[in-house]
Length: 478
Ligand code: BGP
Image 1: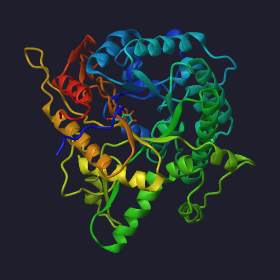
Image 2 (image 1 turned 180 degrees about the vertical axis):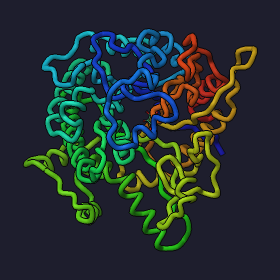
Image 3 (image 1 turned 45 degrees about the vertical axis):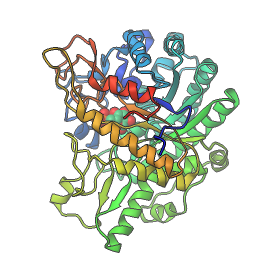
Image 4 (image 1 turned 30 degrees about the vertical axis):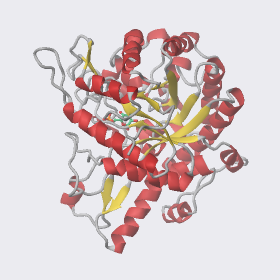
């Protein structure tokens, strides 16, 4: 049998987000955003999930690793040269809204911010690398959070519209792949990053969460329509956090529960953004949780007209569900809940490693939507050790990626239309959920540590050379 190769033109590359790599705090007139007020360290997740977060910087209590991040703002040329050396076809990055509209609600875009991304895109094109740009990746302007309550507010849709028009018009000749909201469904578990507001103490989360989603759906449809008009040869996708939900056993109660969780978490947002309508199953859920959406005239038509061209998604883990969980079972679950899967091992951060889950996800998504898919995040967060001779032998990362790439190959053989693969954190960066540098994903090591020390020097890990071969052989040499 001929060895398997990925389809011709497959988009190999790596993924990042502005707030996790750029640094350049306050430079180029950048305004403050949500990521600027997120504390570093393992307590970040707890802080984010405790109702009543106040969005203030408290330097006495916390560190703020996103302020300097890995200084991509000044070092992008060096980093892009390394991506080119690996043979990247695409580079996924995001635009920081606050570089373009520092407070989110200005009438005019900030020229310095626009010029920065011109330089980055030009540098990428110098090497034939296509940018894949996320419009909003966990970093709403802080002013919109404080003055308007983030996506709770309808007014934010207008500001977002101004932002997307500014970037589509400016970069229409430079960017052909776009995505609207990073992991839009993460708003269910991380409303601060996903929806731009904190649930208040004593507040029922359901109504504001779904109203905010509705505003994002309208904003997403506006962006899709504007993109198609301004850049007719571009493709614009949604971006969801996908974690297939398995039933713990064959008890039909558990199977039904897993199905419900799956539909709500994995499919609700994608159904609206890809099919252009609210799914049937959500009506019962709205009734049971007393959710009444304020849907304005024309919204549903707009959502219907503004459906995305492809689905970008992140895949890190699956989730195993059971209807009745003991306290112990709950505590052994994954980042996004569920119970422990006895067949899977987990990463040092407790994320269950499941390459077959990626094949399952690709099949499920393609069966349901029949639009091209793009794996825009996947990777292993791990502690790396620099040996005395300077080498970094990250075989565990290579194993993880190899198995997931094989799973993608199997899904393609199953008939799935997969556009590309951008593994997460192709260069070490600040972790989104824990604000750590020590949770490393990169092919490129960055000398930067949780206590803020480090020279920011870049080093190639063993996986750098491995991924270079993967790309050069179009997935044949794993
Ligand atoms: C996704 C986010 C990324 C990223 C990644 C890894 O949820 O889109 O921004 O950081 O997960 O997560 P973490 O950084 O928490 O390890």
